[in-house]
Image 1 (cartoon, rainbow, N blue to C red):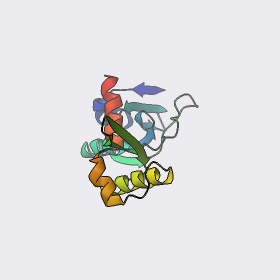
Image 2: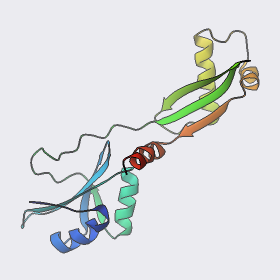
Image 3: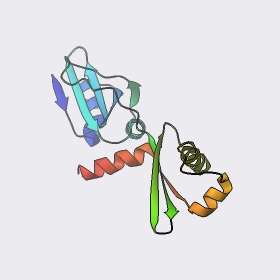
Length: 164
């Protein structure tokens, strides 16, 4: 049997129903699922929480829970899909020519520096022939780039905010 509770009641419910401070956390594409299970009573407590699993784990640990990786399942109906890695998104606005602005976007698996993003943009433009015989420094001077980096947690928060 599964008892589904709101996230803010999860810690208290686990202590009361399951009699433990231990729970399991599994990241999903939509956030994370937290479960606890009493093997004698055959009762599972489950909650879902949007946002990064690291933030969910931190909140539960602050509530006095011991968090382990994993998921208590009853059949396959609730087994979460493996979480897809959410990338860091880098966007660069720049002066493309006298009459038009440009936007260049790239994705990274770790937090890039502004210099790394600009160098990747420069290299791509050079490789595709969009830039010829211009140094990196001259490219940056003429393009007047504005680099914005969006973190995975910010991306998840944008989606979460739209679903509320």
